[in-house]
Amino acid sequence: MDKMLTKSSERRNVHRAVALSNRIFFFFMTVYIGYATSTFISAIFMGRPPYQNYYPWLDWRASKWQYWLQTGLEYFAMLGACFQDVCVDCYPINFVLPLRAHMANFAQRLRNLGNDPDESADERYAKLVKCIKDHKVILRFCDTLRPMIGGTIFVQLLVVGLVMGFTLINIVKFADFGSRVAALSFMSAVLLETTPFCTLCNYLTDDSLKLADALFESNWIDQEKRYKTTLTHFLHNLQKPIVFMAGNVFTISVATNLTVSELAAKRKMIREFTLTVNLESFYTCRPANFRFLFLPWCKIWI
Image (cartoon, rainbow, N blue to C red):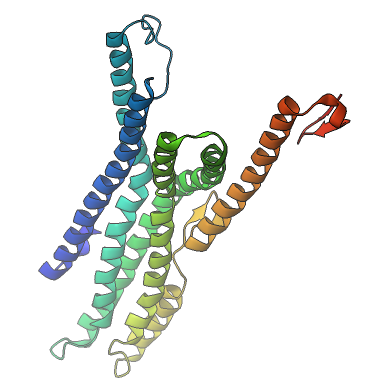
């Protein structure tokens, strides 16, 4: 698609999109490292390693230097995991942002068709055919991205709701102040997995629909019959929106992101809250006060 850029203004638009994608990558990295650092600091105040991983030759309870060694190892391991997660979460955005810049340049080229009075009829028709070929390149680019992005976003949309439910239960029932701060930063990082890209998909759909408006605004009324016939077929194809599907199941959009995340989080939170309350009742209540406890998967008779 970069070969389609013929003007310096078009190249500047693409360069701005690339620069924005780089800034978004560093913003994601900052949020993810903020979660790892908040967990690290809260663990230091509580006097234990952040994740208490098992290391065969380390016992963090034995001495101070082993405690700090294990804490540092866990922190730097989490930094590596954060970098990997940022790469996975940012690559759809890094592909779609330049695509939107190319589509904005393409819309301007469509709008300028037929406006040069020095062009002949054959030259105007050749420009129209070139625009049709450029649109096919954009569609092939989207078809190449769909299998990768669709599978990634489908898994993320399913996992986000479950993770949000578990995190909310942890904040409400179990976490202290330091753990709640770390959990809130973790929730912010989880929301970044799908929300920005779903928003970009909405914008991308709007951009694809604006291409038909841009072509209709060009100077086509006074053109020859061959030009008008080709433009009519091209205009019909431009009216098809560009959308991405999550696992070929549902459309990737802000509405889908909100619906899936909210529904999954609510169901998971209700189930886990019911299970937590029942388990607390099981350990605190006397057997004489009840006949059985109802759990989500079984009944415990007393």
